[in-house]
Image (cartoon, rainbow, N blue to C red; front, side, top):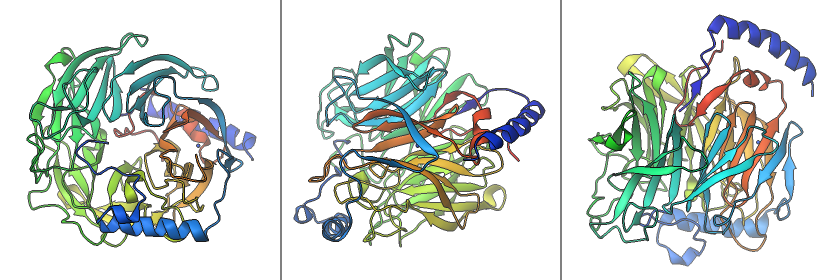
Length: 501
């Protein structure tokens, strides 16, 4: 959901080369009610094989591994440092009000929270300030922005579509889940203008501009169907496509429910998730591609027809991947990084017991042309640090850093912190920077750490579940050229091409 500045390629290339040279000299030396809830560490409380395995591994890790950093202690590589933090504002400052995803527009950052969303002025990244907040309970409030519109995902069954709704079982037909639309022309006073109900709610959504730019599409990802839920029936192998006319957004409506897995997805078992929909989709509109992280499967899609996305290749990793969570293309559209959210974000998986190939990223090359394109596995990447048994830590949301000539991304790892890593060599990814806090507690597991960590206009912004908004600065020759790329808008699950070589 990136829209870069329209500067011409030749001009940008000449400016880039000169500026990079200067920089190199100066830089010699950041719960849906119908889904299983994570954060359960009682080994006897569940019959889920994967949950039991993780619980036992966590118990073993607590007895055998160095706990590392102390509570709230900060550690980082020399090239990555924190320059600002804004704690969660009341009434979002409780432990149960989890910060979630991030979006950007101009000098503003938009931060989702299970209780609503917050708008910050980041015109001075070293002194961000609160502009407004909207109380609108509805986990997990995944967020995107486009022009004067803000879109919010609701994946917890509610009594109605209002921001004053209360929790209500999905077994009741009248319960509501889906997308909420706000008018954000006045950043100090967002206005709720429209809702669209979708099957199984909206865990996440991906914004895809129409080719004529007169409307935008939202690809809505949801999962965990049940025969007891009237609006969320199995097998639920679909996504919902919402069309939003920009001149009249109140006419937004579901226009398609494409079945991505007509032959069925991953049946699950052996620690691998059953595919019942998708968790997240990343679109690359300029290349008419999308990558779907769909629980037990990873898919490559053709989205040349925005209302009829279709799968052109499907991959599965039953050895090391438990839950296909999210995806990131490289700039040339020749690679995809998929993340595995082993344990649903509620387990301590960054330790020697779990190892470096589970709860990790997987780098895939895209080979072939047209409908013959395929995803080919090349390697895994996981942060090389051991975290404490009280720290939920696993691969989570990150973004490409728009550098020239290399493939580098920044990524959140919950209480594993922030990692910057280079996957230019698909078979040999390497971490180049990191920043992290110690555990929230050295006695018990508290859900925390960075949920989403993204690069935007020269700085790294991180939405910490408990600690609020962090701003980090990276000073490294390998990422210096990214400061030349300016964006008007950033919704990370919509990638846009930038000049490279």
